[in-house]
Image (cartoon, rainbow, N blue to C red):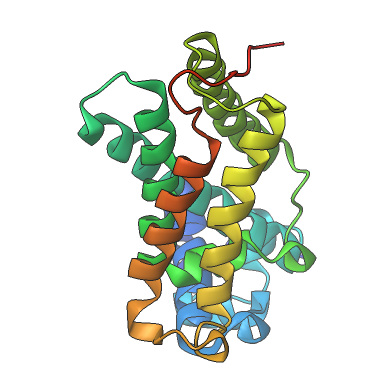
Amino acid sequence: MSSEASPEERGYHHGDLRRSLVAAALQLVEEQGLEAVSVREVARRVGVSPGAPFRHFENRTALLTAVAEEAQDRLLQAVEDSRRQQASNDPLEVFHAIGDGFLRWAFANPAHFLVVSTRSVIDYDSPGLRERNDGLRATMRQWMEQAAAQGRLKPGDIDRYVLGLRGLVYGLARMHIDGQFASWGRPPQHALEDSLAVLDQFMLAIQASPGSPASSPP
């Protein structure tokens, strides 16, 4: 493969071409689904030679992993925005806000969520994705530890509470993308409303009743 850039490629700054390739891949997912994404088709859409994307992404997996990393950044920002809008440092309210932000973002950005939740097409163990996931998990655990220290949680493993919230919102978002709500007798147009109600029930289920034994942080 020649190292000399084509005239089309020279029209891009280094970062601009990478961003354009990621944007084109996401657009393909939105229009035709994950199966339609190929490095060649992305190059065609951006208007560069078929070899140009390989300067940034060695293969399709690397390209879609970059899309997933961008999706994770947007998800984390949505979660942080939801937490700040809560305007409270109550640990259970913050924990709820994290789940709320996750659900609202996933429902509003199904193509992004489809990429980041389809492990077969991305390198989910890449340093970028791992660091983002570990950071969110650590944040969730921090708030659960505070709730436990305040005697606000029912007895249980804090890590399982964190896993429970993540599994709940992740699963509900994926059910929506896969069109499963109708098969459960729930109108698809009310999927977000139903999901937020399930989140509310989960939060009630893990809270200690006044006067009952509560969990303590390990």
